[in-house]
Image 1: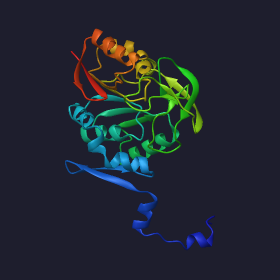
Image 2: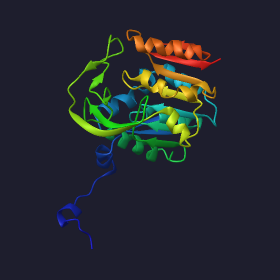
Image 3: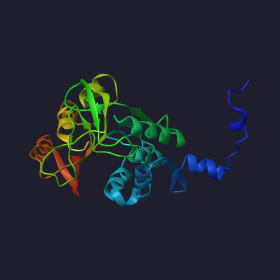
Image 4: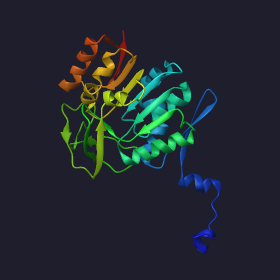
Length: 257
């Protein structure tokens, strides 16, 4: 016997009405439909501006080979994870600590039938394993600028330092490192994308052993040229034989020479 009340059972939704409750944005690539869940204004904005926000990122992905593995660190709702898996057939480890983003990320995996290609993991990435807190700038799917361990972020790519903010919510969260994931059996990546709102230097520091082994072909990372620790990332990667293959404000693409 149904537990749904008679009044609710009388409700009948058209497909159009149902779509409004569960809105999506659809892109096509070589005849293939790629579906993005858009339950909030920020997720809708991200989906509609897929080709506008980071065209160099899409170009970077277009050069991947089918059996490659990508770590998408700071995946948000998975725009680039889904795109890479759907258009190139690669395997993706999509890492996103924020709960609302993580839910939509998994919804996008489901909508595109990519459960065998994209694995979503819910934790932060840093230079050490740690249980702490994720300080949220907004409790809305599609938003960013959150801070792990401390309520700090870069307001924009031109910020001269990490700035403190008042979180709207503090979520329990743990952090892992690139090296610890590989040590635990996650396949070493061929490509790494890092966008963690100012803490990129910590993510790189936590992956140096993996990067030193030479399997990582390319690294796309958001670099703030006004932050000294970010400029040190460039020096560290160049010392390991990586060259800056492409530089667009704020993303740098490093290629293993």
